[in-house]
Length: 128
Image (cartoon, rainbow, N blue to C red; front, top):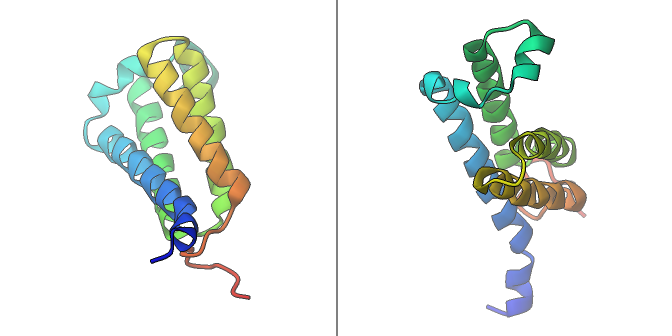
């Protein structure tokens, strides 16, 4: 196979890998919310009026639904942009820590997916 043909799969690999990352985090939050409540910032509790466990559950469902849409290639740009904004906010709240830097890198990769949009294996891709 020609390497130029392989390059066209790079956006597919990136989109699917990020979908799996968000799916893992989302399902982890839904199955073990107590492990995640410590990450909920005080401002989120104050603004929402919800408890930490509820915020973790809502966040988990958001990430699961968004990751499935992203993985299927449905509404790639808006879904990836929402995930980018979400994760960029998390990275900013974590600051220059190991987790913050990791989440910053993942948010930038998600922004790249949002900017590139549909790839060759998206479910609802417009065919030429």
